[in-house]
Length: 415
Image (cartoon, rainbow, N blue to C red):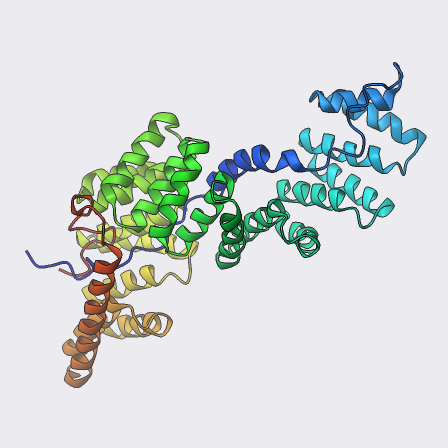
């Protein structure tokens, strides 16, 4: 059997759905972070006069009776609209009721009364995060971090915001600061592990995600761990994690797409197609499902169907070198060398170390009679391939060989 020229190739970055991270992150954040947010200035006034609506609102807030607390604080503000304590507590109540925009406006009113109050700034940041306003949250958090660099809850929130803005290196930088101070922090471990996964640092991600899952062994956690294993090409481990996720939540977003990738890596093309098909029923724009279906159809010689899937994948990620490579391979299969050549050159400009693009370009030059250019690209390919194999050997030290497969999610490049 001819060796797959992509067997040492790193798979495309994992694109696990944003909502998965959001649900698991908030599970941790509201356990480990929301508790330190200011609950106002005077909760638990046990000696308050019976019938005092403001004191009763405080007690309702303390007991988690959000509607009662809300009614009480609204009445309190009719007596004193600039009462910092009441505004702060009302903001917390509105946040807990899911009325995020009202909470944000209430905290801003509190800041108008006390502009430098760190507790109010922190609660405002949390409300902004809950409302997906990450840039605005960062504006609140950075001054707090400057005032108190050892406030690791603030640093953790910054990491969370940077992650959701896809600034993964910044997220990792902030989360690493927290990890050094609090190595057992499960919420931070998940943020850092997920950032590492997006950066392709899968070996570093796995132990962090494992730590996070000790705090919450959820379906989401198993999926994120599986994504890290896919990045490491540990397809059996990924499949096992995904099976556990499926047992907990069969309709988990992203589950079937990830399972399809694991099955491709294990050489189960038929099973992978079934999972990718399920993924596309739920989300027709799923990048991984469209990319791999397009690739598999191309390898089967179904070029028209392959082009349909790959076009959808390219619409999701217009700069994807992997999809551009597939279009170049389609053009080569159709002997349309004038179309394939600019695609391959564009890939190499973006990714000079893309070994497969150099390999395919060497074939193109050979077929079009440019022998010297073909030889040059072949030599570049062989050099990059050796470097990739050496790198894989270094990264794979300590990895049980039975975990790996002779196939990769990329699959054979050419036949």
